[in-house]
Length: 149
Image (cartoon, rainbow, N blue to C red; front, side, top):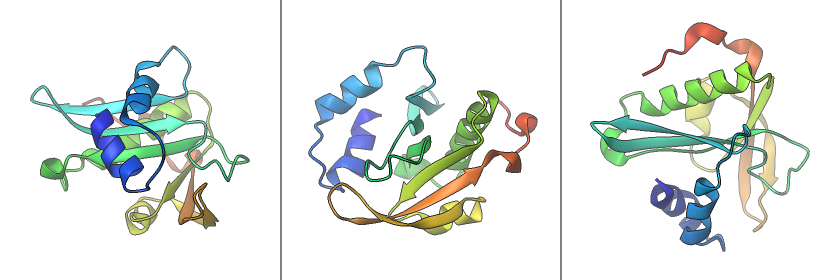
């Protein structure tokens, strides 16, 4: 899973983070809500992941918390896995009292807009690259609308 996130979000963004640092980041999970990573497993194989983090855009420290690193294995896309992962993350966020979540995207703006995320604005990341920031208001979902899978 760390390899997916590294290749999809670190390598493509030309970030200075290392795979080892990312593995440590995922391994350092404790009992606090942030950071929280969910994984989808099919036939004992990890097929997708999404995270809730305090901040996913260091140039926007006033916005928190964030949905981050949604990724589904290419062989398992278009099966609703990403949407179920996102719905579960929203459900967990709502259960702990979060009312608004933010996310950043460079390539999936339409995907999130179709799912109720609202455009906040454009921002530059720490490397000067443009990204779009969206937000989701928790009142838009019902607490019991997400089932375990």
